[in-house]
Length: 569
View 1 (cartoon, rainbow, N blue to C red):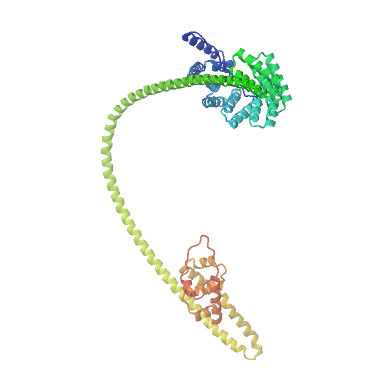
View 2 (cartoon, rainbow, N blue to C red):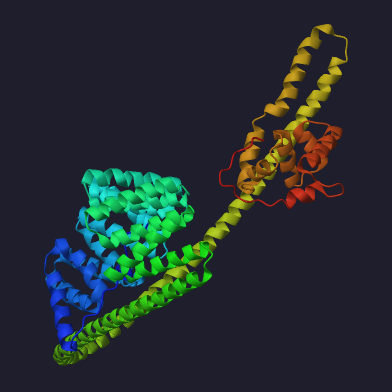
């Protein structure tokens, strides 16, 4: 099966022998030599130390980190934070590793260092993957890919494409996984990077193995094995030999598979690679089970389980040791920070006490002076307030009196306008009555047979009839009515847009309580026509039968409209 970059937890080292002080001296010496060898080899040194002495490695890296922090060397801070994150990742502390790598990522981004930022994205993506967060891992790999594409870094592109392909393989999207691994293969050849090329061949073999295309899987595993033999990478050879054994076992070639599994077992024992030893024992047990030899299968599977338990116990001990170191360092940092904070607080308290004593004397003098001044100001302010109150009282009385006078004036104007409207209406009635009489006389003359007068009299009669509608008295009537009853016509026109000018005139006369005979005279129509007009008006305003039209007109609510439009009477 294919993997992201190997987690060194799978390769625990042998413990050193000898007295405790001697072991500790050599551990610190080795760690310090790795950390001071230079930034180019710092990450690989961290990986080696993480396998053997993670707690000591963390302590010394933390010392270096504190040193560059005091020197305000941000780029070095990012590098050491990345080293701590990588160390924690190799020990299985994924959450803490993510925290440190995110801090390093922020520093590299602020420094605009694209190469280190891209490398950190790949490291962080790997940790996210092992922390079972494949979507976040894919996001980190994609961002790393963008930086490597911009800088045309073939080695970085090969590594990143391989990581993305592995994500898709684990998501069972083998088509995409194959496409990305092929891209990784292309850039790995361009970079002439044998290590990544070996891993990519192994990844491609794993994809074909998942697709049950065992011939292609065998071919790629063989290519990967050849490269590990050329580079003398014995640990890599063990893993690939195990994979080749899986291919033979899955294709039914149990003897060849058993031979390869035993070869992997022997090499693992020689190199002390307990993870690969456990895998080889497990593969041998599977082969015996397929060969229908349950006793042998049980024997090897039990050996594999026992070894796995030992591995996890050792890993747990290393993790506990590292976490204890983390706790101790953080506790000491916290104690130092608290001590410094206390010193600063004590210094601040002393300085503040001196300042307070000095200020208290000044403040006492100022308070006494200000109190005296405040008393004088309050006395002056009281006198001023009394004067203001008296003035405001007088102004309010004058304003109230003015409002009363204004109200009386408005009432007088309203009464005057009402009298003027009534007088104007009476004048219209008298004028129309005279015209009505003239009209009747002329109608009587027309009944005579004098033909020479008929034409002229008929024309005169038509002019008098037309004068009922065009007379300017109605305009004067509308102006005065609007002054007495403001917004009345506007509200009517808004609520009943179908009302005609004749309807509005009839409503105005009803509003003034004019009797029916005078209404007919004013409108120049007969009493029968007036009844028809009143009936049509009731229909237009939707007045129910039995309800008084005059009462409705008098109770009609008038409110000013936002944008009134004048309706002609």
